Length: 333
View 1 (cartoon, rainbow, N blue to C red):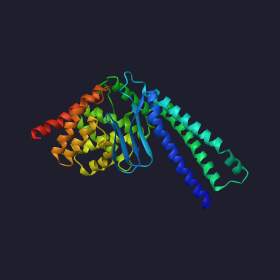
View 2: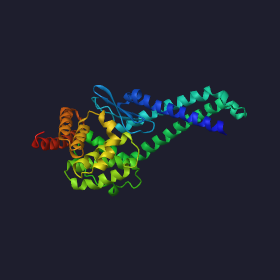
View 3: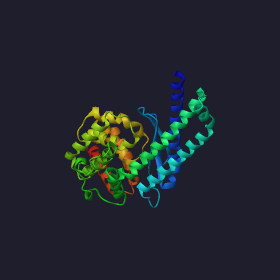
View 4: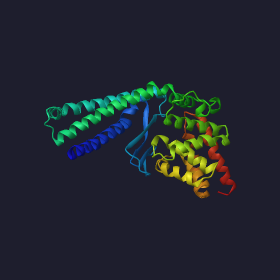
C-alpha cells in the first residue's frame, strides 16, 4: 500500500510538471500563431511580465503551479477575433497534449501489459499513473474548452468578451448602458465571469464619474477575492480594489491586502494604469506624496502607449492620472 501511494505521489508530481510545462511552452511559442501573446507568467509567486525592454521579474505571495496570461497581440495591424483565436489556440494545445499522452502510452506498453497480467512493479506503477494523469488532463481540457466556448460564451462570459471587443473597436463607455450583474439575464454565471464583468462595470462607473455607485461592485469584488489565493487573471480586479480603497474610501487594511496580492505583478508592469494605482496607493495609504509624484511621472511617460486600440480606456486613464497630478501640484509636489 505504501509503495502504491508513493508511486501515485511521484506520478502526480511528474504529471503536474509536464502539464504546467506544456501550458507554458504553448503560451510562449504557439499562441503567437493565432494572434495572441503571453504577457505574464507566475511561477509559485515569482511573477514575470513582458515589457518593451524584455521580461521583468518580481517576487510576491506564493501561488500554486504556473499561471500564464495570454491576450490579443495589439501590436498587429489587424487584431483577430479574440474568441475564435482563443478557441483555435485551445484546440491546438489539447492536440499537443493528446499527442504527448499517446506517445507516453505507446512507450509504456510493457508496463500496461505487466499491470494487466498482475506482474506490475513500482516503476511500472509510476509509468501507468503518469500516463493516466496525462489523459485525465487532456479530457479535462476538452471539457473546459467545450464548456467555455460552447456554453459560457453564450452567457455572461460571452457578453464580457463582446464588451472588450466593443472597446477595442473604438466604442465608448457611455453607450454601454451597463447594469449590476444581478439585473443581467445570466443567472448561472460563474464567479470568474462575474469578476470579469464587475471589472468592466467599475470602469463604466468611473468613466461616468458615478463614484457613489462604485461601492456596490467594489464590495462585491472584495468579498469574492479577499479569501482567495492569488490569480494572475484577476490582477486588474486587485488594482481596482487598491485604487478604490486608496482614493474614494480610504481603508489601509483592505488596500494593503490586495496590494500584497498584486505587488509582484504590478512591480514588473510598466503600463500607465499600474503606475497610476501605485501612485494613489502611495498618496492615500502610505501618505508619501513624493513617491506618488514619482509614479504619476512614470504614468504620464507611458500614457500615450496605454490601450492604443481602446481610446475610451485611454481617456479614462488620462483623467484619473491628471486628477492626482493636479492634487500633487497644488501641494507643491
